Length: 214
Image (cartoon, rainbow, N blue to C red):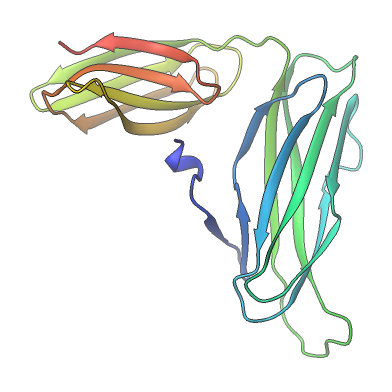
């Protein structure tokens, strides 16, 4: 669904190498019972690789977070899971929060060859509390173009996908975008007369904008 955010396995290129992880994007509601995510770490090289996994933040007031396992060994072309749990405490204030998950390649025991190791810092973002999300704007038809102009007038970041309804009653993916509060998305798309409606949906599945095209 969110193609631009990494539905497919993304290869993240770093200054000194590659670390392959899926998903490469994290933005979720932080629930009282805890918010989980499972990541897949893949070794796409022909060498055995060891990783150390940890949070860059040592402490965060009223927010518990953990990752398991804290170290992984991957044989060539092997993949393994790592799990993250983020749990708000009662005194955590409503708002947006960011953590940084670090995945660092380390040397194998007895390894004598000098090399530069890769390191990935993956930003984990979430919101806590009943923060409203409001999308406002308009969609214009200009000849064979569809002009989308919408603004996030809510209290939190939104991860949106736009869909078009064709005359076969099928919703067709158009685009995905991320908007912080106060940000606006403006873009033109090729338009086919077979499309009769447009909707913009947040990643939680709720529709935040709907308009007939004819």
